[in-house]
Amino acid sequence: MCTFLYGCLMQLRYSFRVYPTAGQRSSLARAFGCARVVFNDALRARETARAAGLPFIPSSELSKQLTASKKTPERAWLGEVSAVVLQQSLRDLDTAYKNFFDGLRGKRPKTGPPRFKSRKDTRQSVRFTANAGWKSTTGGKLRLPKVGDLKVKWSRTLPSTPSTVTVVKDSAGRYFASFVVESGPQEVLPTTTPEVGIDLGLSHFAILSDGTKIDSPRFLRRAEKKLKREQQRLSRKAKGSNNRTRARTKVARAHAQVADARREFHHQLSTKLIRENQAIAVEDLAVKGLARTRLAKSVHDAGWSAFVTMLEYKAARYGRTFVKIGRFEPTSQVCSACGVKDGPKPLNVRTWTCGACGTVLDRDINAAVNVAKAAGLAVSACGAQVRRAPVPAPRVETGTHPKPQPVLTGRQAGISVL
Image 1 (cartoon, rainbow, N blue to C red):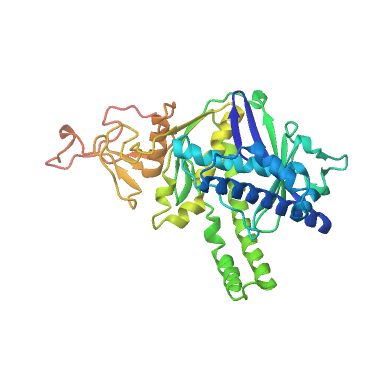
Image 2: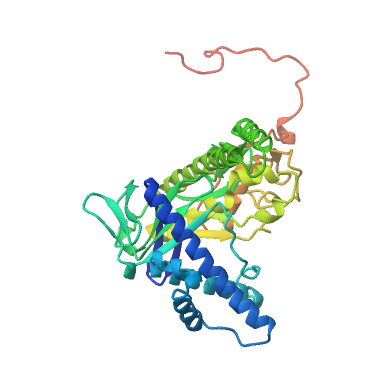
């Protein structure tokens, strides 16, 4: 589920599993192929014009060329699919160009120029807008033009009427119907008191400022044996054979199971944190940099970016406060009890003693508390694994008696015994 904010409204995406019949799979394959051909034809036209020094071809001209090509014998089969699917393919090309140009202008992260789509791509999709005439039948099926009534596994009710539906076939051969709906502020949760800072890690997936540690499931590590076996079977198959295609699908399904389990874990944990806390603070981690180290596999297995994205949009949806602090904040170098900074520490140091106040601090919990404080949240180290270290006794309390002192009874010490 992804989201975009537009003023007070939010666009959410809901995906449901679809089970098309053999004939419907053929119709969808035809739609996937036609959308790919239209995209490539439009991209080729623009690239040819650019190479010849001609002006950029607008979308209206590409649409006219598409209408003309459908009347030719070579492209007559484009009329076998919904015209909305073909027009949306042109919109996708415009979006790809816009992202490319915005990256050059510095308005967004840089992306490469649009590339031609291959028929060998394992992930394919087509999009139907409202004017395509698609609808949900009384029997709970999804009716798409020139495809038919698709069986859908509805897992929840949509909060509003969808504006578009995208049919996706993933690398594992599964079909999904993705709906875009708008949600307003009516889903705001009741106000609560707790505020929490979160420190993300590898040994523990998340450490909260209240001392709670959430173990990392390590879905990829647990599935490595199965993935290795399926990958070895794939490597033994002859290239271009049907056996290799089936083996590739098994590898894709194994990876899809890992991704689905990780996504479900992220959703459950993010929803729990949003419901239980009024404000949440996290650190802006440099995931790309960490992914180039020897910890790359563990970093990707954790999926921090996806989890933080879920926290961000769920906080906006349910009326919670979400704060992301800078990645250069010295959360692991500052004592959360007295605020003294005593420098960086190697990763093998999990507990340390503050030289100023003598507090023994858990590295991860201390970082989570500092994340919350840097975000301006009203949290403290109360409840965390923080304890006072042994401190030398004052001079007036030190020393030994020259002679053993007698042990006095209660009556001798002047204490009445009842």
